[in-house]
Amino acid sequence: MKMHTPASSFPAMGRMLALAMLTLLALPACGDDGATDEQLQTVENQRRQLEQQVGALETEVTQLKAQLAQQEQESNANQAQNQALSAQLADIAQQLTEARALLESQDWEGVYTQLTAARSELDALRAKLAATDGSLELNAAFVFGGTPLTLGQTYTTSGGASVSFSQVRYWLSNVTLLKQDGSTAALADSYHLMEVINAQSVEGTVDPVTLPANRRESVLARAVPAGAYAGIRFSIGVDPTYNDNLSRQSGELHILQNMTSVSWMWFTSYIFTKTHGTFQPAGGAQNTFTWDTGTNANYRTVEFAFDSAVTVNSQKRLTVNLRADVANLLTSLNPATTPTIGASQGAASTTLSDNFAGMFSVVSVENPDR
Image: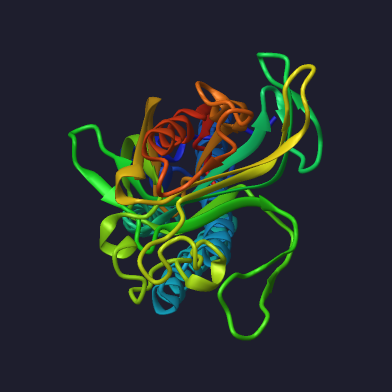
């Protein structure tokens, strides 16, 4: 099995090889009658060590090439920056090709010089990548209890009633990563409409506009500042800066998302959440319910700490998997007695907004290398 010398051990190996060079250069060439078997074995051992170092750096270059290619696909990284990094990798690869040629000719000193230069450039390149923006994938799967939420399917509540949903929608906004020192990194244009809906017509438009059926449970943020993070924060709804002025645009905010309506203070504020469906108490009649929230008082913020700190940069992925349990929306609220929640139902809107904030739980936090 080929021994792999960790890249981090190269400086120590380099010092050892530098001392060995003096011995190697003083030895007769391999095969000369003046060299003892022990000396020849020493030469062979050093050659193998040098070859292992070349192989280790070649593997690292290959890995970095793959990471750069993936970074270019997944992020909004500056194209000129990527080209510069790729050119630097190509230069390092050429140095290693030359090192292999020198290895074949037993130019030990030349090999050592090429390896030293390649290692130095790789260290500089890794430092650049560690400081380059990474990405965050935030998943919030719709479920009812332990079951994936499906529109039109009947579920049983904890009280024995039957409930089904025709749509569930909410604004997930202002995603922010939390550092261990208390500082934060807010992600730009972070307004995302999470939903499970059937096709529906947009209200209040002169020309007919139809939104297609959709299931949206994931957000991909492509420009996350490089750093170490200890938690995540996000909000449900739209903050007053944008909620009080629909002419301002950011992220996915737009009146054609059908999260404003004539009956919901048209051109005044957004609807933060929509939960519509049917409800049938045990032994009772089935009726529809329409629960919407959307005033500034309904804006909620959720925060989770990670079990351990995570690193985000161009070489480290961050995926946060959440569960959004819609069953939690029925906590302390009964569609049979409160079939409608809107701007005029202040107390019920407050409870529903709290329930939306409480429906999230962390499933896992993943932070692998690219």
